[in-house]
Image (tube, rainbow, N blue to C red; front, side, top):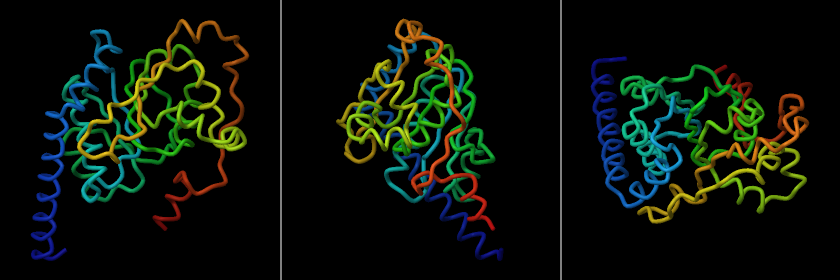
Length: 243
C-alpha cells in the first residue's frame, strides 16, 4: 500500500470510528437504553454476565443499523463490566476486525455457524440474525443447566414461531420451536429513534422452574443441523468467498 493510500485508509477509518462512537453515545443516553438496561438488570438480579457472545453485527462501519446495534453491544459491555466479549460476522471487513481488536473485543477466527458451547452466565446478542443461527446455538447448548443461566437477545422467538409455517420451523428452526413454550420473552422497547434497528427483537430467558419439569427425552438431541437454503452463511460459503 502506498503512503497516499495508507493516509486515505487512516482518514477513512478514523471517520468510521467517530461515527460508531457517536452512535454509541446516542444509545447510551437514549430512553430506549434506560428501559432496556432496567430489563437486563432485573434478569441479572445483581450479577453481571460472565461473557458476551455476539453474532451478526454486519458491516458496522458502513450500515447505519449496524452502527447502532454495535453501539448497543458496547454499551452493554461497558455498563455491566464484561471483560470477555466474543464477536463474529463473516461479513466483517479487515478494518472492522482491526477496530474490534483495538477496543478489546475477542474476535472469533472461524465461522462456527452458531454451534458454540456457551459458558454459564453468557449474554448472547444476535441482532436480526436468521432463525437457523439461533437454532444452531440452541442445538449446541441443548441443556437446561446451560440455558437457564444464559440470556439471549435476538429476534422474538414468539414472533418467529407464530409467523412461520410448521413445515418451515421443523426444517430450519426445530429447536426454536421446541423451546418456545418454555421461554419468557421481554420485547425490546420500540421507542428508539429509528424503527428498523431493534424492531422485533426481544430478551429471552429460560426459567429453571419450567425446564426442570421436562422429561429427559425432551433434551435428547438429533444429528447436527444442516440447511439447504442461502439464508445462513455457512463455513463452507465463507471458504468459497475466500478462495
